[in-house]
Image (cartoon, rainbow, N blue to C red; front, side, top):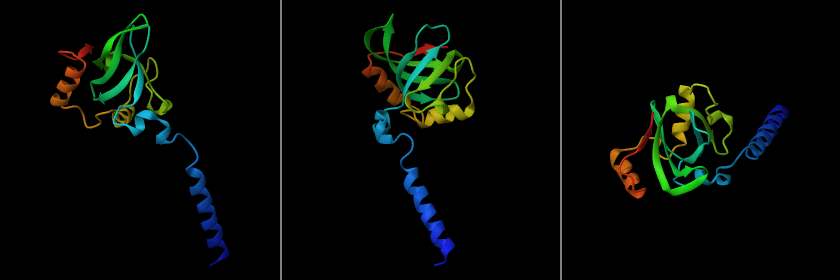
Length: 148
């Protein structure tokens, strides 16, 4: 082997070995090693506090999430399914993924951010009416709560 080839191979080995040590590992983030979607904090325009819960699905018109019903900081009952229209979303913060997945307060969501959120949702392929009906039954809801 030539000296340059040995150096290049050694450099490549160092880069590959060190690359595995930086950033969050999937095993460090609970929802990444389970069937659940990402944990998000979603702020609705005009509401004083975030809605915190699981990101179920994302489409061009809205965000579907499961979160506890909270009034004045008190959880009232089991989680509920809520669809929030993009026009009503003030901000979204994704747990442990940093700014690349967040929707900044007051800014319009981009198509790229929407695609990223879709990939980390529980149902990245979308949610079928049958699955949605089962989720609603599990939360004892007759319909999705809509925020337009």
